Length: 249
Image 1 (cartoon, rainbow, N blue to C red):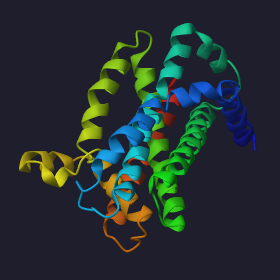
Image 2 (cartoon, one colour):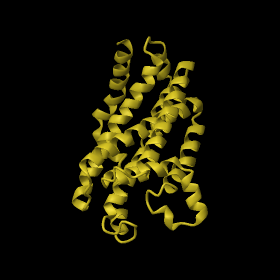
Image 3 (cartoon, helix red, strand yellow):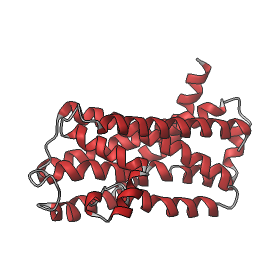
Image 4 (cartoon, rainbow, N blue to C red):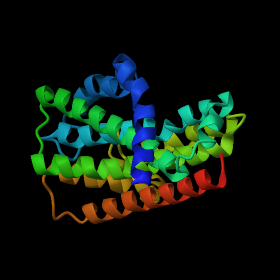
């Protein structure tokens, strides 16, 4: 019960600034919205799903938000570490594991709200997906996002007090992970070396699983690979994040 209380306390502390500034939440979605309305219409007739380009593209947009949102979640922790406010949290009896879980739950709620908005805006554009597949896809996205958020916290702790490591690593790996996952364009149209690099990218399997779920392909083998990739990222992130919090920030 003490752990649950501590987790709720941290979650309420983290979610409060977001609730006070909903416009800021929309501002962080400007890039996904631009891709949705300006890039998405160009995909008609260019993908292997010629009759349903939005079913192919919308899951990719959700993965893009997952990479640009939870992956940058450690930024606020880094600000607190540099500013010294995190030190005041550490002298409290709050469980350090709860500090990680509460922050991660905040990213979970934000990601879920953003995903629901993107899906709602995509429907008038021609997006039509299996309702059960959408919920399953969001669950998979949340597992992946929780892992990314936790890894972001680990990177923020390792980057304190300067922060240069955090900015350098996130910018260095975010765009390769994005481009090599086939979010924007089909990877199978690329050269052999690019397809090999994409096969080594865990995000590729999560993107394929999301597309299969949103289309109702519940027996597609890509679901297994995507689930394994998402669970692996989540397990790695939570394990390393908990260890970092317990050792001291």
